[in-house]
Image (cartoon, rainbow, N blue to C red; front, side):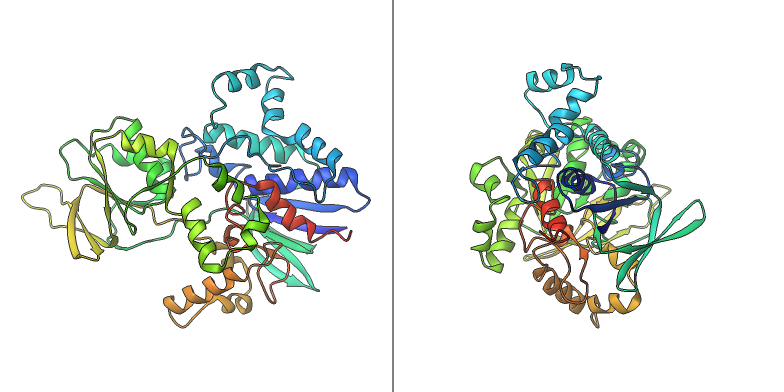
Length: 429
């Protein structure tokens, strides 16, 4: 029996739990999965812990649930049918009201729209609690090697424990917000996680006629924040500044969607082509549902460039100071006024390094930030087929860094394939 620890109780953990549960019911082998989560299952999607207000809709279709695309591998046809019957999005809706079809029928009648994040969080919770796996609500503080196995140290209410004997560890979750520029310590400068803790509170002093709200970054976080402002009819100018030509839109296309689950097509691409496709499909693009909201608002604009720094100007005659945003682009450097600045540079997918022993962390550190970045990029290009780190890090799986293996493993697009890649490496037959 192989023991696997999953750190983080989100959709990737749910997919691994569902697949392991279904496999254990149909095989003489057994996968012993244990999930560790600091807050609660599906916390990052609930609207109670930053990252989202819980109200905005999921961008990916709900049918891309924890088992999608339901390809044979660990599970045969009967096993896949069981996985779908027990853990699919459809089954979740039917079970919501004790077997009533009302929720499922309403969802279909209303066009099968992606659910609000809070509803998706409930789905994640339902899957994890329904699966026959071990669950631990505690904050993981360290991952170390003991007698050739992995050990997980975790803390809850001041009590520290260590669980040992794991053959593998899966790190999930987006990680903390990155800082994209130098800044003053001003309460009007926040990041993408802070914003969602209380959007109204942060923006209540911004009034029509003020300098614009500046959002630094051109990915999903910046677009979601701008869309929230537009939906809540804040007649305040919003300027998105991103290091690309424009806000690009991701639309539903068979040829693009199919690439997420077509391993043969992906294998035919070289490294440069894979990076290009990943950017086109997942990074620096905005789903059409969000892009439509942004496009319909006359208050939202975009400017190419990179925010280098943000500082507060000196207050004059008792009037509150403005923020000055230093922006770099090919045309030079400009300074723009702002009433509020949101740093939406993204999230640290390498957050798990803080849990590893110092001797293992050294492999990812260069003499300077530039060298560190190059070293990590090289490492990510070498991610193994089972989504694990290369070399001496056998058994450490990092799906958030797995773009070299496919464009969908880091997202919600092919959760079933992601769980298959990881769990299959622990099955003998």
